Every structure is written in C-alpha cells, then in structure tokens.
Length: 174
Ligand SMILES: C[S@@+](CC[C@H](N)C(=O)[O-])C[C@H]1O[C@@H](n2cnc3c(N)ncnc32)[C@H](O)[C@@H]1O
Image (cartoon, rainbow, N blue to C red; front, side, top):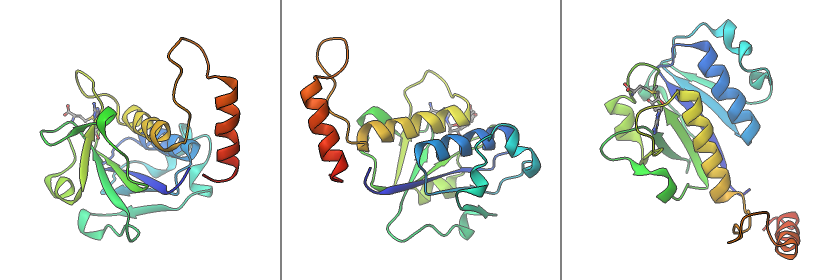
C-alpha cells in the first residue's frame, strides 16, 4: 500500500477504548498513533491492546490542538458525525493521512474540526463506539488504497487470472 497513515483520538477517557484503537491501528499498518488531551488511565491500555502497540509504533501525546505536530504533507481527516461530514463510501482517502476521532462523550472540538482538511462519517443511524469507528475507517482505507482487484459481479471470489495479475503488480510495488 502506498502512502502512510496515523490515527488518534481527542479527549479519550477510557483506556480500554484507546487500547482497542491502538491494536486496530497496529493491525492495519499504521505508522504512528496519537492522543490529544487524553485523560485515561495509561496503565490499562494493554488490557485491550494485546499486540503491545506502544513497543512497535511511535505514540505522540499532545495536550491540546495547538500542540499537535503532524508530519509535513500529512492531511488531517476528522472522523465525526457533523454537518460538513463527507460520507465515507464516497470519500477518497489521502495517501498521507492522520485520522482523528472524538471522545466517548462528546465530539471533535470546534478547534479540531477547523484544523481538519476533511471530515468523514460512517453511514450509521447514530454514533458507534470510537474504536469501532476507527476500525471501519481503516478498513475503508484498506479497501480504497490496498490495491485490491475489482470485486466480481457474481457472488464468490475473484477470477483467478485477475487475482494472479493483481498479485504480480503488488509484488512489483505498483
Ligand atoms: C461514541 S462517539 C461520541 C458520542 C457522540 N458524539 C454523541 O454525543 O452522540 C465517539 C466518536 O466515535 C466516532 N464516531 C462514532 N460514530 C461515528 C460515525 N457514524 N461516523 C463517524 N464517526 C463516528 C466519532 O469520532 C465520535 O466522536
């Protein structure tokens, strides 16, 4: 997959949720994870992050929006249900992206929303758990940028010749 991504949460209060976000980020190949204004019990992250992400990925812990320092050229993408949100199935993910999700109780702050180049929403009837929203976001990114072949029209797996062609392209880094 070309490009890279990081994912973070603003104002998170439950270590179990943060651990679940980190484990998911690690599993999907994140380059970094971050928190902004977090106030969870740090020691309890491992309860849900059994992959011990903190030993493998940089974790930036910024106190406020003003403290955030993303890599140059990295696009900040908010994940939130709000008026300006783009529906995720219609969104093209930037190659270099930092996703930011909101707290368990509340939403991304207005300052954070202002900083976001895009805000996207998952088409649900109401808000879902933050770690689940993170997982769906990263799965959607993988579907879009993972270089997978088009799905077949008929039920079942892809045409084997098309799959082989896709694997060869992938092994060449295309
Ligand atoms: C449990 S929700 C926060 C509560 C919600 N803002 C409310 O007051 O009803 C936690 C976070 O998960 C993310 N989230 C949950 N459902 C979402 C959805 N359908 N689309 C995009 N983000 C979502 C957002 O980042 C949100 O701030």
